[in-house]
Length: 96
Length: 390
Image 1 (cartoon, rainbow over the protein chains, first blue to last red):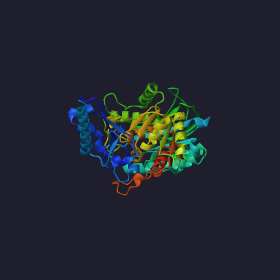
Image 2 (image 1 turned 180 degrees about the vertical axis):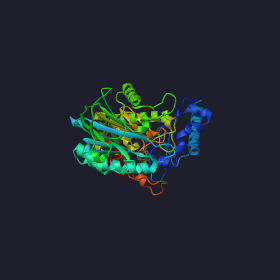
Image 3 (image 1 turned 90 degrees about the horizontal axis):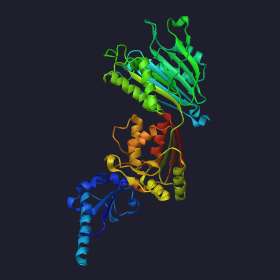
Image 4 (image 1 turned 90 degrees about the vertical axis):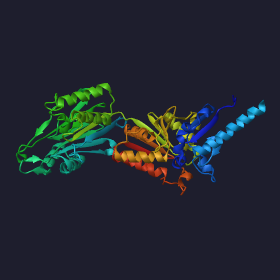
């Protein structure tokens, strides 16, 4: 069993993110595979301010353990989430 | 002090079945910086567009004369002489009831042909005499008028005869709902909720009349309510200040303000959260794909996203209803409509991300949207509104 903290996912609810497809991300929990839901905590956040500061990246934004996902979609978020979970598994193997 | 009081005025209307337009017209006007409110209910002969036109003509004339401070008796005479009448039947094409209320606590009423109105004070109906005026040139037509003093907490309720006659012919409604039962209904509503707003009460009375008619309105339904009350205050803070040195000042205003509070905008709410050291909690229960999810914070009644929500609020205020959904925009609209005195503190810092030409929709700047909201609140809903830029 992994002893890591839950992976934090923050979905930006700001105007630009909503207009550029963020509304579809608001039900992200429903798209998470059942076997990993206990490893993840999904929260909504007021405007994360990323649209102002990231000139080369585009909304909508999601943070996965504070790592921004730009032009976020359910697929992109799940890809990064999988990467982080595998990385946690790797840490567990190393520690044995 | 008169500035501590407010004259809340609202009305509800449902046209006769199969008619697009109500033959009743309700006009209201706020004068003398809100210290005086005049309302006119006119019921046109017949129904539909023709009745509405006759009623509108009468109501507009009535509003004009009474607003110009002509003595009430003289106003009545001029109206009776100049309003259109059916030459054959020698009856007016429209009835009218006028109420002129001032914050000094005076009420003037002028009435020709409408159903009786009700004056309610301290949970009871107030009985009073009306002066009856009739002259030969009007044949059998006459008008009534009175002057009265009123106190804070008093209400005046106007109804059209469609309300008092609703249900006519149904079992238990041989003579319709009747004025007596309408009065009893109003008093019961006030007893259950002593601070029931003019808006809620007018909607309640009209809904009950609609029920009496089993949803098939037999005659236009209109109920207008004037409520002399202490104002319900609302503060709306939206937009980061142009000078971020003012972040603390606007946050302190939220703490100081006595009334309800809305914070509108993600960046704005982050500023308030930081300054007041209070967490923002988001509730997904009312998820709506059209309007971003709203949030809450201790000491604030509603936190919403900014531009998309406010654009929807403009739409709802123009239409006069908010779609029946529950989301940040409908909650915002409801708070506005259930307030009397609304203070807007608007930060003028522009969000450059909203000006991106590649965005799929055009986002107006905050000042413009809020100016639209303020204008509608003042002109259509007769709210007392103050707007401050920071």
